[in-house]
Every structure is written in C-alpha cells, then in structure tokens.
Image (cartoon, rainbow over all chains, first blue to last red; front, side, top):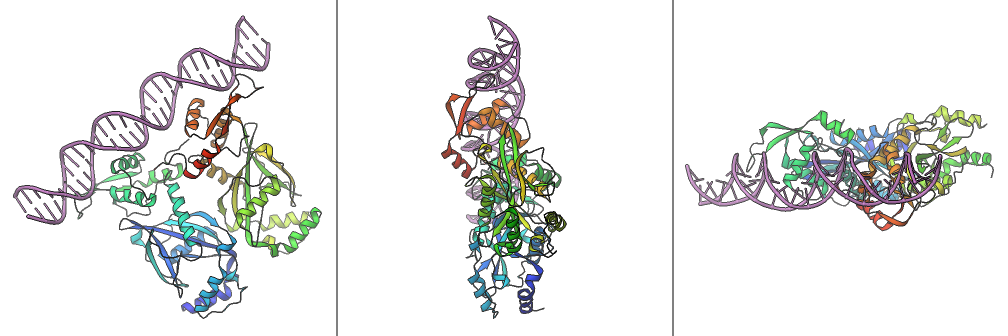
Length: 257
Length: 257
DNA sequence: ACTCATTGCGTCAATATGACACAATGTAAT
DNA sequence: ATTACATTGTGTCATATTGACGCAATGAGT
C-alpha cells in the first residue's frame, strides 16, 4: 500500500475504525550527547512539525493505542509509557489547519469530514533509550527525527503546550520516583546520570551532593569497570538494580509524609 | 420539565449536544466529623451508586464540563477541581448495565443507541468544604449523599477504581502541594488539620512534629481566638494565609531537587 | 478541688543537606 | 618522559530537618 493509498483509506474509512473525538499524542524523550531530545514528525507538505500521534481503535485501550503509535514511530515497544494529561480545549483543534494540510496533498474533504471534527487528545510521554530508536516516518509524515528539547521548531496546534506539560510533569515525578532506566544505556557513568537530571530540571546540581543523594536511594550498582576511551580520569560505570529500581517506582523515594 | 422528560430529551437529543465517546466523572471529597467523605449518587432504579458524572458539550472545554457537573450536584462552583486520570479501557463501560438501567426506567433503546457506546472518561477530583455543599440529585439519579471514604457501597462500572486512583493521586499531591483550604472551614484547629492529613494518608502522624512541619510551610496564620465549647483544653484557631498558600501551590513545598 | 484527656511548647539525638577541600587519575601538550 | 589540567573519587564540616519523646498548662466533667 502506498502512502497515498494509506491516506485515502484512513480518510474514507477512519471513522469506522476509530473512536470519534479522541486521539493520543506522544512526547517521546531520549537522551543523547548529554542532551534531552524529543522525537518529532514533519508533516508531508506543510513546513511544520508535530508530536507523533494517532487514533484509538474502537475496541482498543488508549494505553495500547499510545503503545502502537510509539512502536510505529520508533520501532520500540513495551517501554515506560505514561498518560500525563488530557488536552480538551475546543479551540486546540484547528479545522483550517487540517483542511489546508489535506488540500496540499491533493485531498479535498468536506468541512464536516470526521478528521476535521474537534478532538480531545490524551498526552502520553515515554522515556526511551536514544540509541535503540530507529526514527521512522508514518503515513501522514515525511520526516521523523530527534530535536533538542530546547531547540524545537514551530509545532502544530497546541503541541508545544503538550510538550511543555510533559516536561513539567516529568520534573514533578523526579521528586518521588527514580528515572533514567529507560533513558540511559545499560551501563552509564555518574556524570551522565547527573547530566540527565540537570537537563530535565534545567538546573545545575552539585556533583558530590548529587552522587551522595542518588546513591542513597539504593537503586544503583557500581560495576567493577570504568568507562574507557574518555578524556581525563576514567569514571566508574553504574547500572540500575532493577529489583530495587522497581520497588522505588512503586513505593516512592522519599515518602514526604 | 419533569425528570422523565429530561431523560427523554437526553436520550433522543444527547448525541447532538455532546461530544461522542467522552465523559467526565468527579470524585468530590469533603471533610466532616473528622472523616473524609465522598459524594455519591444513587441511580434511579438500580440499587447501585456511582460518582457524579456527565457529558461534554460539543463546544465545551472538559474542565468546564466537570465544573458544570460539580455545580449541578453540589451548588458549588469555582473551586479547586483537577483532572487526574483518564480511564480508557474498552471494557470499563458495560452495555448491559445501562440497558438494564434504562429498561427499569421504562426506556427501551436499541443496542446501537449513543449512550450505550464505549465511553472514555476523564476523572476529576475536587476538594470542597463539606458544610457549604447541598447535595442535590440530578436527572438520572434519585439520591445524592456523602459517604465515608472507607465505607462506600458497591459502585457502578469502574467507579471504585476511579475513586481509588483519585486518592492515590491526592496522596502524591500532599507531598509537594498544600491542601486543606477547600476542605476545611475558614477557621480550623491544628488537630483538625492533622486529622485531615491522617485521613487522606491513612496513617497516624506525630502531633508535635506535624505542627512543626506544617507551620514551617508558612501558609498558616494563627488567630487570637481559641475554639470554644470543646472538651479539654481549647485549641487555637488557624486560617490559611491565602497569598502564601497560592504561592506554595504554584511553586511546590519542598522542591526535592 | 480533683481528674484527665488534650493542647502548647519544648528538648535531644539522629539524619539529611549544602558548600567546599583535596588527592587521584588519565589525556594531551611539551 | 614529564608536566599541565580537566575531571573524578572521597571526605569534612556547619547547618537544617526529622523523629521520638517530656512536661507543664488548660478546661470540661466529676
């Protein structure tokens, strides 16, 4: 099936396949070159980017739909994927935008076409290991690539707001949940982990205090090896203690009360 | 318009008014007699209770829909109301349940009626001042009353799960946000505030340490008066310092990182 | 006047946190 | 080889926060 055929099928049959009014959008974050990155798609003819998103089959759980979208875009599945917010303002969805988008593709639809109706979208975010992802464009897009989190291009509709909200929630989670398992390779160094935290928090942390605190969580295991081929003193390699990591995920880190 | 007329109108016209596939459900919590309570509705003919919920008008933001539902059920509006989770499993919605419900009301609908389709619901929770609420049943229900949070009756569909999730999120929020302003009367005592925390957390707290910690947040003002007509030593009255309270809401309490 | 549960206000040790010092290490320049 | 230097591993110290608990004051009920 060519891309155009796929689009035709979607346009003509979509309303029979999918739950009306609802979509999912995924904020897929990866970490590379000591930078937090987000996976974006470029629409076929418009010079605008957007988050990977999709619709929910009529008998499909929303979480599975998000998983499916993620799989289609990154080749990854079964990863840490979490619903974080619903975006349900009536004006978030711009009829004109899609109408123009489709026209440029040579597709003319009436203004009451299903894809032009108001959509409420469920925002999901995923933390993935950058190196394992093979960005792959889908039916409606021509490019799929990583962008540095603070240097994203203009995004369609309210996708910038969705991205910002994902980061806000992520920062909150950092306060009571461990993070990083899905963002880092299996073996990593303390400075890499610290840089990840600093990037998410957008804030410098003291190297020594960071180490003390993170080790205090008891979710890391220091390996016997050090990182080779790196400038300056070779740092130790660490890996997550998965058992303790998952326990911490469930029970929280600090407690608070 | 009688209740039956209202139901007829809803059944016949609903699909033109509301966004398909979507609903909102509200977990409305109040505090009374040193107990956390939740507002539940009893369906008209079934001996089963449920959370107050409703649909979203086609041009209405979901937050406003939740506000509207809340207003209709409690007489309150403009209060702390927060989306906390989306429930989107296909099997959460039980066609048979509604079919039976309607039959007992003398309403026969075909199995493809709009109200029998799959619905994804957005869960909202609200913390309200118990004494200001006037529980009022709506079109589809015959009773509306407070229930102790740990002694709720059987709930329809997945409403028990929604309630539990709301409490889980609320407990998390307690770790980095102040709470209580909407749950307590304007003037309250320290033991009352502590009891609120203990109820939400389902855990005993040390009286003296609790006071020290909560005062440390700097969101309380101690009044010159003490609570009268109470057994034993008269405790001081406190009220929230709204300015600082709202600042703490925005900026968080502890920071963590 | 006495009892007693409860409140207000402490103390003290243990623990956590923030700021910073210093030696060890490995690459790169000389 | 030697040296320079950025970076890492480890530790210190003062301060802040936390958990556990003591004790006197209060005020309704007897």
